[in-house]
Length: 248
Ligand SMILES: [Zn+2]
Image 1: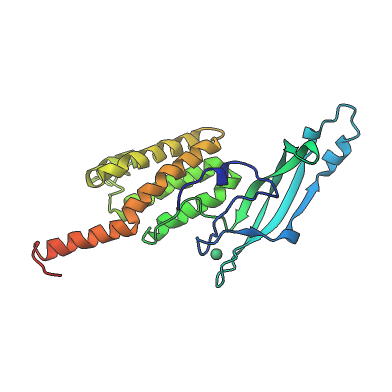
Image 2 (image 1 turned 180 degrees about the vertical axis):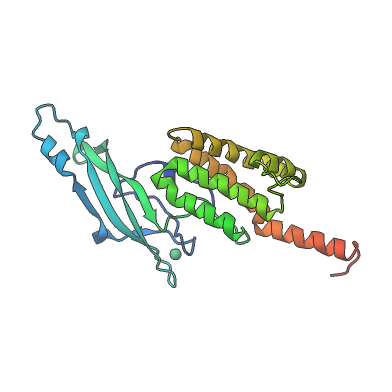
């Protein structure tokens, strides 16, 4: 799955809904069920129209909708909700006009922002899938989940979490140990650790940081747990077991 930020970073129009991938079968593209969409202006926003200084960008709206996966045998159903952002658009028939763009504040279950290889350990997968949901709700929490998933990679790679005196090792110390075995992947995981630390100490984390984190994490997970990684491991084991001598 190619990483396409435009799916995730911008509010969308009713006429051009981004191709959100299905959270269940992963390859279907979710379709909004047209009559499921409900968009309402808040009461306070309606009242504000009476104000003499009222401008269109004072409008506050909320929406809910159902999305469905069109793939036979899947038909996953996803709920979505959010608010809107008013943008000026040019229309050939009507000239310049305002349009409400849909800004999601939640999906359930959430579309996968990156592809997770089948061999990703369950605990790593669960943490990353939580980050898919949290991305829409609170970017700092999404990053914290990604950092937690890095800890779970350390666990899965049998990197000790305590020193010989029983004291806990920090993620930084565990990553140093991990770098001996997987030097190429250390920088991505180190970057996620920094982002996770920033999320813990800062009031808010920009969405761009979360998308950057997903973008660099995807290829790393592919190299660690993708089919190529599994195939390389199998060949390594075959060569070692047979001491380099085999005919098939
Ligand atoms: Zn599906």
